[in-house]
Image (cartoon, rainbow, N blue to C red; front, side, top):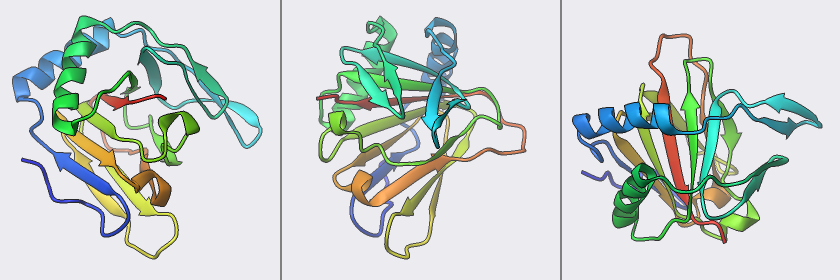
Length: 192
């Protein structure tokens, strides 16, 4: 079941906890962990190069750049095409690329940001699939005093972000000291 919009204003964030069955999610997690060409990359932050606190991979048909990192796509795999088709069906959009993140443990994270790079277009539609260990996803408004929204991303779930969300909201996955299982996140997107 898809939730109502999680945001009080400006943009849309919809969450579906049961996008995949437990068995499907387990199988996808195991296969992706083994088959994906995971990389440890560096980005430019505050004028210096730093290691990204997670492993990443970029698949699809288009090159993607952010924070000084240029990602050359690996070709689609049958497994990724299968997952992409399911995400496209729910989102009612065609995706041409996917960014995969592997959070190895609680010390892997992603800081506050918006997916607002020029090549994503004006109002990007992004389907974010979570597999493995549950982590909290935070959303905060860039200007107005709305409370921070916290969503527990469950194994086999999908979070759809669309419309004006990237203009008005930032999101993050924080570090945690509690013991968490590895998590794979797939963010399907359309690069112009």
